[in-house]
Structure formats: structure tokens, C-alpha cells
Image 1 (cartoon, rainbow, N blue to C red):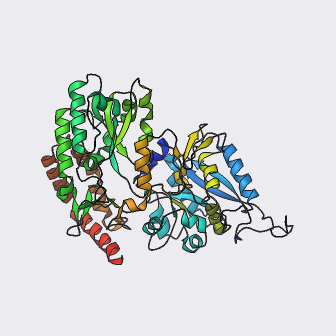
Image 2 (image 1 turned 90 degrees about the horizontal axis):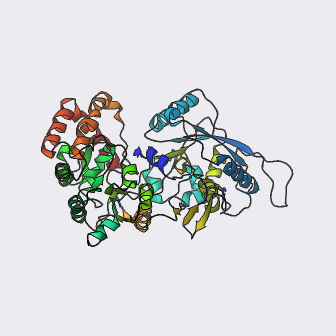
Image 3 (image 1 turned 120 degrees about the vertical axis):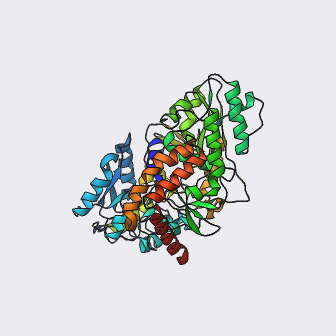
Length: 513
């Protein structure tokens, strides 16, 4: 779910994967793929029913470092593409994160021919769509059964741009549930029953503070403390009234259909109050604003609880704590089965085809091919028996250091495997988050803010996220003082124009639904 890249950071920390692949209508068999308009054929058939296709090298640009062992895996992928007579091979190039967006934009502007790349709303996707630099994929998706079925209908529909599929949405979950990773051994040491609610977690944190001298209650990186306004609320993981709009500090009030600033979003008052209290009482670190090493410190056994998100990545960050003598972990997610939380079903990463590519149909054939489990697993996890081995139908055991960044090409909700060392609770909530039926479609699904009309005001508003909203979420600034400061500062630099523009764009989306 934007940071999203969100997501970018998550991708770097865990084994993420995304991609689309194609056998162009061969229904998963190793026969001939459907004819690709850009895949010329040779004259010599290998059998009476099949003509071997000329192999076209498809060029891709993705962000990040080349994975360890990637050359061997790519060789195996290309050999299987040839054996399956798809008519393509992959030429994947990795560019540094620091310059990825600019490098791709320059290549696009210069008309350089390449065939696929990662784009996103947090990169340059809006500009690329506006300039006609990437092509719509609707008809090609509809013609490729494996690709279409590997992604739920809700996810396809929620990730259209102007009503069109402008990129294959890459993701493994349909929404996110939030909670806590806690030290199970400490809970049992204090004779406490299984924790179910935020109030239960609060009692656990205060018990740790009272009884432990070397272990502190709770840690989170300061930059991620905005999530505390969700996780410390009794309405977390429910269809609450004030809904995130994807524009930080602004929410959509479902009761009166109005966009409001955080100072008027009453849903979060309880969490803000708790953060203020926890900071004052020493449950939250006095250094929370500067904290950048929460994962490391938790893994060293110095803290009893931290943030959890059911994205298949967050829980895996904390497995090293189990190396501490006697340490055990469990996941606590306050959840009410009767109240499905809202989700926009929107993703933050997209597999796109530039207009300059002469091989669009063939790219989609490869995306379809990659949507077949054995092919997906080959690129996502590596060579079976060398890089990984299956653990049941949906699990895997890592055997090497190979880790493909699936968020650039291979992520599919229906195909993802989970590591065999995943905490049972983490796996349970991750599986629930993969199921579209766990969530309620958000009223603002389909909204993606275009700040062009208020770019001056928006540029003045955004710094207040770091200077006021984060300290408010961290408990560093008291709730009354923080909300007043936030309102005065934002409205004082033209923030009402931003609110009105968000309202206008959301109204346009909701009226079209």
C-alpha cells in the first residue's frame, strides 16, 4: 500500500516481487504462445504443429542493484522462454535508485527504444500519461488469460488512470492491516493472556516499563510515526469515518462527504491522545523524533514491541530478535471481523510499456508467461533446488542470497510464496490481506491527487508534515497544541485552496462511480 514506495524502502528491505508474464493464450502449457505481432517467425518448423519463433531481446530498465546470482537466473529464464517458444528473451538493466526516475525520463524524452520499465505515481507516471509517453494496455490484458486472472478484478479496476490500464499494477496485498510485533516470551513471563486490543497492548507496555530494567517498551523510527495515529486507535482496522486520501494530513469524512484537515479528523483524536500520554510516561522514547534504527534495536532485544503491517514484509524484518536467548515473537492485530477496513485497492508500482517500444504485444506475452506459477517462481525466487525449495504449495525455503525485486515486474497476489520462517501470525494476517474480501472498497478509490492547480500552495503546505504532523503523531507535541498549530500554519499559507482542490477531484471520482 505510498509511500508509499513505500514502498520503495520495503522493497529494499525484503523480498518483494512483481511481474506479469505471458504465454499468450497457451493456458499454461509449454506449447506455442499466441502469435505476437512483434515476434517474427523463422521458416523451419520443429514439429508439424509448431514453428519456432525468432527470439527478440526485450530491453527493460528497473531501479536498484542487480541481485546476487541474477545472471544465472536470467540465463535460466531466457532458456525457458525459448523452450516455451514465446519468441522473446529478457535484457534487464538495473539503474541506481538515486537517479532512476531522471534517467528513465531522459531516455523517454530522447526517444531511446526500450520495452518495459517500472513507473509509479511517486515517480513520473502522471507526467508520462499526460504526454502520451506510455501506452494503454486494456485490449492486450483482456487477451491474456493468465495475466488477467493473476490479479483480482478489484485491483485491475482500482488502478486505472482516466479509465484505462496504463500499467500492470504490481502488488501482493489488497490492503494493509496494522498492529504490533511483541515479545511473546515477556508476555508469558508476566502471566498475561493473549493480547487482543490496543488496551491490552497498553497494559503490556506499562508492565514492561515497570518490571524490566534492560528492555524498553516500544520503538518506531521517527519518520514512520505517522502510523501511530492508526495503530494506537481503537478503530484501527475498521471502516472508520475519516478515510486517508493519499494526501498526507488530509482526510475524507465519510459522514458528510467532506475533505478535512487532520485537525478536524476526530477519528484520530484517541490515538493522538495516547501518543501524548505514552511520550510523557516514557512508553515512547524521548528520542523518537530522531530515531532511525528501530529495526536494529528491536532485533538486538532492547525493546518489547514495535509496529506491524500485514504487507508480507514488515514482520520479516524482526526475525533476528529470535537469536537472543529465550526470545519469542508474536503478532497482535486488533481486528473486528464485523467491520471490514477500507481499502482503495490501489498499488504504488506499475509495469509500463513506453510508446517507443516496437514490441508491445511481445512484452505482454512475456508478462502473461510470468503469470504462470512455475515461470513466476523462476524469476521471483531463482532456480529451484539451487536458490530455493518449495515448502508446501505456498511457502519456500531460501537456499541462496538471490532476491529479485518483485515490485518491478513479478508481484502477483495469487502467485506470491511466503518464507518458511515467517511467524505464524504474520502469515495469517498476510494471507488475510491478500484476500480482497477482507476489505471494503474505499469511497475515494480511484482518486490520485494532481496538485498542478494549487502547486504553489501545496508546496508551502507539505513541509508541515515533518515540522508539525510528525511531532504530533510522536507525542512530542501535545494533541491540543499540535492540532491548533497544524490548522493555523496550513490555512495560513493557502491550505484551504488545497482542501478545495482535493474535494473537487474526489467529487469527480465519486460522481463517476
